[in-house]
Length: 376
Image (cartoon, rainbow, N blue to C red; front, side, top):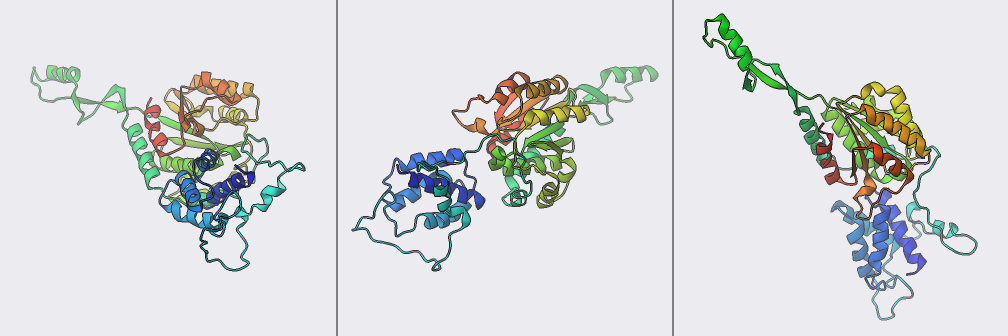
């Protein structure tokens, strides 16, 4: 397969992400593999192969078709080389001399090659540099929130109704308290004039969320931030922090009725959004400044892909301190949803001995499964 064809697929993925379509690097790779199974000289075959891999919702189809027509004009019926002379050409309507959108320009890809002509494609990885913090947070307000809100309410309801082993006296309790009832009979000469009742105490679980918003997590930030906002507004005992190269407490910012308003507050306060990653240093700041949040009834949820530029020893020490104080440590890794996932990064290897649950967080189904892990 020619490098120009791969460049077009990568450019299409970037353009789709800029329009709000969730296309990960793995899906771009699958799109290239899909082209190996079709006739790349047939434009319609190429379109259907790419659309089947790079779209997941009905709303994404129109966006995909629009961007595909720009990158694969109908006059280029043969994608890989020249055109078949016998094929008919279909024109698309576009203003003459209209420039392509910046995200769709392929000229930048040729400028990224070295002197030998070899192509270099940027790949997301861990970085130690801070980000600008304001460029993408405003865009996260888009998208449907109904499903995420329902999942958050379901989790909050399960946490709020979690019964404890301890009992307390209640006027309309579920069970009769025989011991207290018999004590009352002593005062009435053996008549059961009053039936004492009791009910179970509700276990007061606290959830502490530490969300990675570094550059390597950018593709998943939209889903995770919306979920955290919905969970915090449905369950009062939630403390939320975000980190990249530094740790920021965002609990007060998320206590707003509108998600868009919360994001505006985050854009002003989180200055390293989509920047580098220093997980160990951020968790160290957490245990040093907010250790009072940790007890046996606290579930700590870390949302991160495990790409870290810090020292593994720092991360191991911080996680060890958290694990000794918290009731449960849950690490949600969006990459764990891949069938061939293995925790091979340095951060994940040192984290495994200190965490109780390692699960995925790449879609709504994985977030819905979080409920069973949070119950202590």
